[in-house]
Length: 91
Image (cartoon, rainbow, N blue to C red):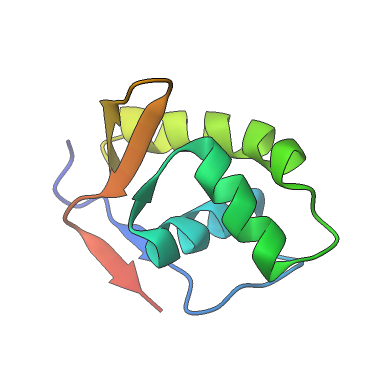
């Protein structure tokens, strides 16, 4: 991982924010979880979003962040769990 690569964690949820920022913010709230967990958290923050629908959006974002080394991931019983590692900035 590039030590200069940092993950910016949004300080609040923004309905008009990018999908990546929404995923990162939700992960910061739950600490660790699957794409389904992210979908549930986002639907709690934004009642216009269905949890199942957003989990399909969250999965490729989380995979990209994991492959980039910006979040960690580990295999769970039924899915991958994602979590923060070092080099994060909360704004």
